[in-house]
Length: 227
Image 1 (cartoon, helix red, strand yellow):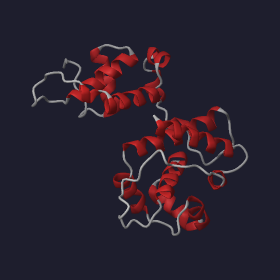
Image 2: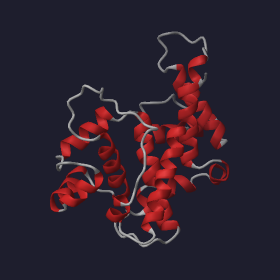
Image 3: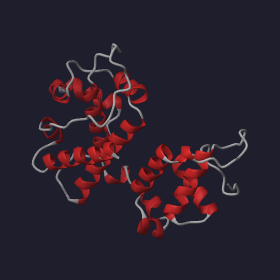
């Protein structure tokens, strides 16, 4: 929870700076700690690139929608932006890819997405002039949001994801369903499905279908499978 709180604080700081400046200038004005998330690389790892700079860059890319290649070209054209973000040199695109896959854990991924998505939504909902910010439609699936009005009235997609992850990380491990050890799906996946259905208030078949839509068909139990 602390990391999410810090993510929203980070997003608020960026939004506030965007009120009178462009995105690069907004980041230049930031003095935000990332103590709530951890670098997966150990202290002895030879990685020469700042973890903080990598996190800030990932948030920047999520806000603009830049790919690694596009962002690297931006930094090459504007080395002052690399300096603002905390780099002593311009990284190549593979450095960003490796950081996301190997250096960031799930908490950091969530931190980056929560921060950036908050900024994107705030910019469009408050009509803040920030041309570099990606369209809101790219982070909000209108079809998915309108699929069930009951879901909209209960919990937001963001809250559902947040609460399910928290329950998985801190609660599910304490329960044992007594299912066979060679079962097709782990207990935690059933518990995630049950949590999701409880929060969107729908039946097993519809809940399983919508759950798989979010997590991937290969991930979760099918609608005719019962705990």
